[in-house]
Image 1 (cartoon, one colour):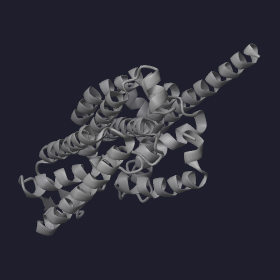
Image 2 (tube, helix red, strand yellow):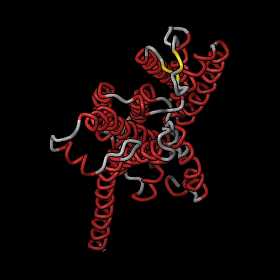
Image 3 (spheres, rainbow, N blue to C red):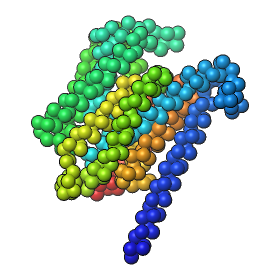
Image 4 (cartoon, rainbow, N blue to C red):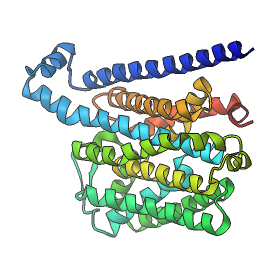
Amino acid sequence: MSEKVIRQYRKYLKRRSYFLTALFVMLLITIYFALVSGSADIGIKSLTGLLLGNGTPLTSQIVVQIRMPRIAGAILGGTALAVSGAVIQSLLRNPLASPFTLGISGASAFGAAFAIIVLGAGNSYVGSNDVPVVNQPYLVTSSAFLWSLGSVAVILLLSKYRGATPEIIILSGIIISSLFGAGIAAMQYLADSVQLASIVFWTFGDLGRAAWKDTLILVIILVPVLVFFMYQRWNYKSLNSGDDYARSLGVNVTRVRLTGMVMASLATAVVVSFYGIIAFIGLVVPHIVRRIIGNDEHFLIPAAAVFGGVFLLLADTLARTIISPVILPVGILTSFIGAPLFLFLLIRGMEKSYWS
């Protein structure tokens, strides 16, 4: 009997190792297609010449300064959103939980609107393609980020007062989302036509704003967050069996839940503050990964990280090419893809699959 259990466990490990390997291969293939796809025709010959140092200045400009930062932003952003969603679902034991359950998206959108209208970043103009251009993008980004952290602070205060239970955290997020939603409506009412266009365009979620400086900031913040999640994976796994079981193993449930929520919120806030609201990555990707490899955080966190990057990069590549030369904001496409996909998972009974 023991030998049978050992064989089953080894088979379990192999299946998950194969899945992770397949995800890395998918990521490499997706990066290649993202590099060569777009309104500018860059084939394998031009890309190979560029890698060997023989590329033309135009090819170098398109690939190195435009497409590669966008690819890096998609991978980092998808990784952060997917892992944050997976961790939050584990912490709250709720399949409907996601980074946006905390009200982070609403707080970020309000922060952007606040910077555009109140702080003067809305002195923008509309370009030849009717695309609003914000004169001070880093002011908008900083404001969105600070308001996101402010929403997390409010949730922590409410949790400390009423107890950091999953129900209190989720209800706090719903309340904060409604509050910031009203604030955004008020800002839009006070805005002129150009400021209103800037607010709406920012909330779409667009990786066209990606730049190498942004990528460096994302790496500096997100890498420690991911390392922290991997370090805490045993505690997250114990919470899957309930708070009482985790306490019996010596886990400080309240501290683990609050620190995990703060780190997940930080990762999400950074991505949203740079690229706007990108929906469904943190909700759908963890569910897909759970259905394939199960609920073990040892595999779930790295698999969600890689698949999140693949998912967002695929969506962004499709957004750039589906009606080329027009480039769609990736947030619109992830909503179109994520909503029916999540509905399918819901119909298949995801609650019963994970924590029953």
